[in-house]
Structures are given as C-alpha cells and as structure tokens.
Length: 82
Image 1 (cartoon, rainbow, N blue to C red):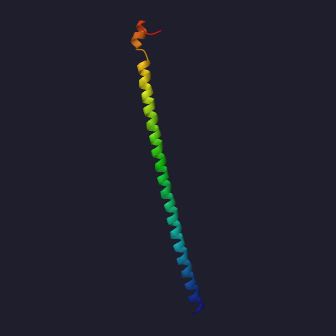
Image 2 (cartoon, rainbow, N blue to C red; image 1 turned 90 degrees about the vertical axis):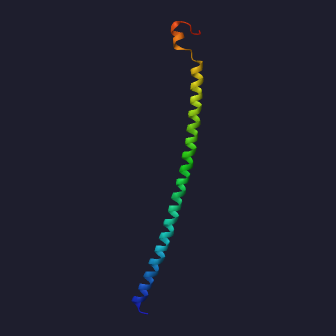
Image 3 (cartoon, rainbow, N blue to C red; image 1 turned 120 degrees about the vertical axis):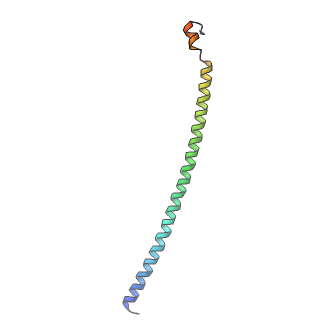
C-alpha cells in the first residue's frame, strides 16, 4: 500500500472513532439532562403539595378567627364582649 492510502485509511479510522465517541458522549449528556428534568418535576410536585397544605391550614385558621371575632355591628352598638 502506498503512503497516501495508509494516511487516508488512518484518517478515516480516526474520524469514525471520533464520531462514535461524540455520539455516545452526546447521548450520555442528553440522558443526564432528561433525568434532571425528572428531579425538577418531583421537586415542583413536592412544593405544590406543601403550598396546598399551607393554604388549607391558613384557610382553616382564617375561618376559626372569623368565628372568634365579634360582629362589627355589635361592637359599634356597644354590645360587644369586654
């Protein structure tokens, strides 16, 4: 084989190996990126549940405080608790 043929063959092999390596590396990075999305979704879901729980607690506390608060019309008329 001539020197030019050997260099062409070597260049083709290096190019093929480089392409295969690049594709595998890109797949690994994409897989990692997709998994990060799953983790973000889990965190969003947990945060949404915490927010809902806190909202329900606040709503229950508000309702309890409204029950305990005297009516404004009774206080203005002087019939409120003292």
